[in-house]
Amino acid sequence: MIPEKVVSRGIIRYVTEQTKDLALSALKEVLAGIQSCFGIDLEFRTGEEDPPMRVNNNLGSYIEKASVELLGAEKVRPITQPSMGAEDFAFYTGLIPCAYLRFGCFDRQKNYTYDLHNPHFDFDEAILALGTETLTFLILKLLTSNWHGN
Image (cartoon, rainbow, N blue to C red):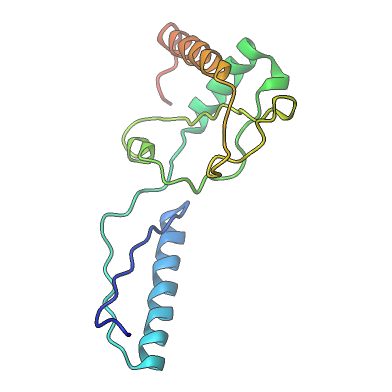
């Protein structure tokens, strides 16, 4: 049985507007090739794409230093590669200065070793208290500092 109509949906993730344009252009080329090769009609539509994450480097540096102050340098690692996560948070980053934090929960000794999108993923809930403490510390530090989003 061959269906009369097929609908395929997906998310295109990108880290800059330029890579978004390249990805959309390449996808349109692939679809045009499929259409031509198989003699089928294709319709390509895009909706409102999620924006890329725009991190304020000054705020990121400030938060990194404050995190080291609270947790120690051995427990703080800067995020050096752009994230391909589909985060709603990215919408905020186009409006106000933002930074992005991740709290690691990998612990081989306690057998918390599976990645986030794995059916066996689990984590030690004690990290939630540390995350709350860290975020509270950072908020209070920002509120009592002279950092103004520059």
